[in-house]
Length: 337
Ligand SMILES: [Zn+2]
Ligand SMILES: [Zn+2]
Image 1 (cartoon, helix red, strand yellow):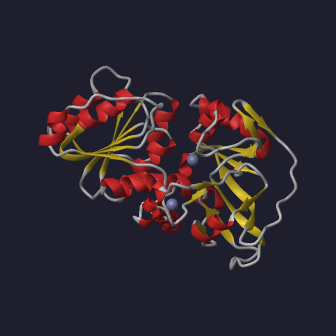
Image 2 (cartoon, helix red, strand yellow; image 1 turned 45 degrees about the vertical axis):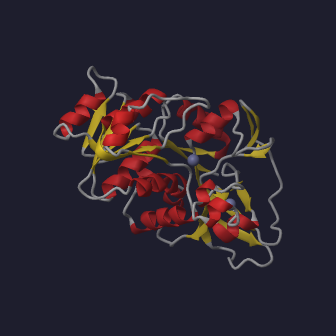
Image 3 (cartoon, protein in one colour; image 1 turned 90 degrees about the vertical axis):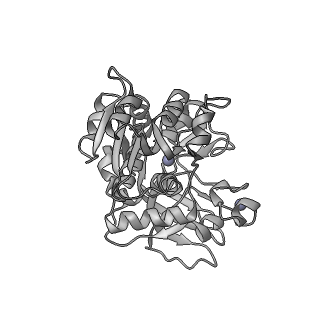
């Protein structure tokens, strides 16, 4: 599937890539749709898609079919690759913040039969899969690595009350990770089809943001008036960013996970931020470390996010799959070439 610009995704026949030195070619076994692809299809993406036309999609797992010179992987190896690789040399990389790399190399092409992985990705951000880990579950490694970065930044611990604002696939992954660490997780979303899925995921509580009454008051009510230990914003809407700060308790942590439109500002109660020592953190993308730990969590069975797959489709149906996502009628669509 080739992206030619906003609204223009085409099925095209391309030659199977031949690996250059340091490269690996994978046969894709499973790919997953992502909200980012929906946004990109609508309006392009300056960072992930610097030029068009380009192959498309970024969550996938596959089997090695060919390797370039100097690569230690072998034909038949099953692996999962992140959708980016840091340079390892810039100031953020040297400061162990590789998600903030000034020269992140992005890779697309999950919606295809084969993908070529560039040398930097092969050397820094691929993980071999245990035979027991199905490709459809392994393909969650990338979004899970993003969610794990947020959970690690928030230092989520057992016994804490963690509120997740937003119930898209990433909100669900954030909630599942927090629950796997023993936190009491409160999911906040809007009633409807997707919201009903939450009820099968075993969270402690779910609140309907569209019901009468204030979400912040409800969260205070659930925490003896104190507010949550950690609030994670996963909608990318400024009014919800503000709600996240309102819902956290003294000494608590807010993680801003959902990106808003460029130029957005929010109001902030400086008295609370200062006297209550609120930790207000951004969380962006993933690192090779969170990517590897995400695969470990999938492999150990600590997390089974494939329950978020609501549809399975063929490669030719990617357009329809992304349309379902855009209308909120699917959580994750599994694409099997
Ligand atoms: Zn994604
Ligand atoms: Zn870098």
